[in-house]
Length: 155
Image (cartoon, rainbow, N blue to C red; front, side, top):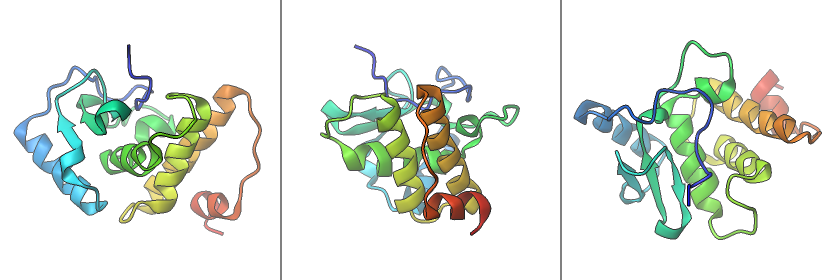
């Protein structure tokens, strides 16, 4: 079975093998968001994503952004992606939402934007934009709450 929880979009290829330098950079990003290092596994799995049954986050080459895209999911920094997996999916493991469902992905991005420490305003905005994109992709309308407005518009 393929794990449906993944970054998605057109980020760097998941086939890109993380170098030791990449891994050291990502470890610093993990530390910056206050995540438990032992949960993260580098160059394992098919894509970057949380695996419930193993309580692990696989990190692949697709953790890196695509600066040529205009989609918020592609533009999020590595730190935001790590926060999405850790403060979004891992923090909500074992819940009833189906893996990869729009509302599971919405919650992961929203929770990361709200709960992860040391994210830039830009990353919080990209995470909220990603959450909103998940609803649009599912054909669901939502109203922005005050937190979303603050992240997106500064008020």
